[in-house]
Image 1: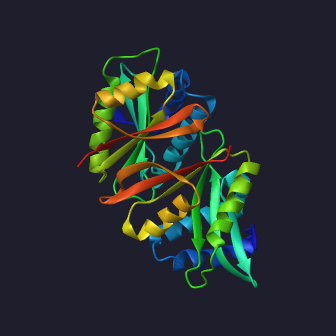
Image 2: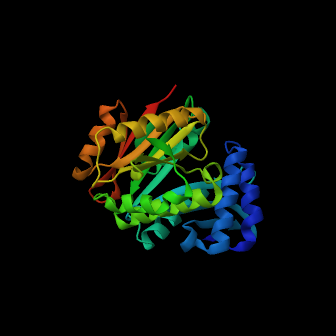
Image 3: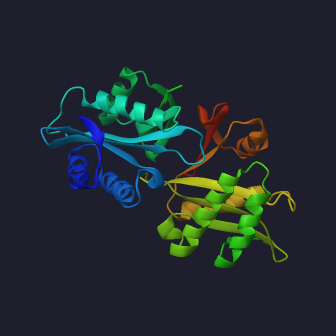
Length: 157
Length: 157
């Protein structure tokens, strides 16, 4: 079941982020910071919307999205993370479907997904391509020398 | 003369941002917010570095840059703004030279400039191309339908 996150999900979200092998310590801290801001002032004011996947009372993963400043209707999908130890087929796609539905409801028309060009992110890139997201731009050496930024986009309308 | 901004420059920076015809009210507010954060907790903690151009005791313009989160050595050049009423030849280029020098000193290796693909931004895009920045990506309809994001990059090392 995908549902809106509530303040009791913080520890599990941190735990899931920490379980993702390709997430650096800095990225886990970034998840924590977005979560704290989202909980303390709410999704609308913070611009960070968290949803979680729950099964038998345990969280399987989370996703976070929000509107991009200075745009009309463009949303970033910041993270989709599924616990590597409890991985279930289809949870990633369920997160995408729910995120797209939520973003459309919030007035979104364009979704941006930023990911890495590194080899260990090949499954991530294949996932977005597999659901029809368009690889629209690559910025060479963006994250670090040899680590490109790959930007996928998806039009909702 | 290009110098580091100090807390007394806030009103002039707001005034200059307001004088830029292509800046929306939302963009002026964004400049104000970045400035407030930079002044209240400092450039290093906020990640927003402001420099200004001063001539005969009056500010001609400002620039703002800072490191991009989750990258190693990538910096955003957020704004370069020169007062439309006091426009001087070469101030834009002086801002670029100083920003590049400062960013290199802060450990930067790659500069990102994001601008609009709209017709009224053609002089802005020509400016960056003229100083050798590379147009590396375009995201269609990013800012709004018909208003693309154009990303220029420049390698420092």
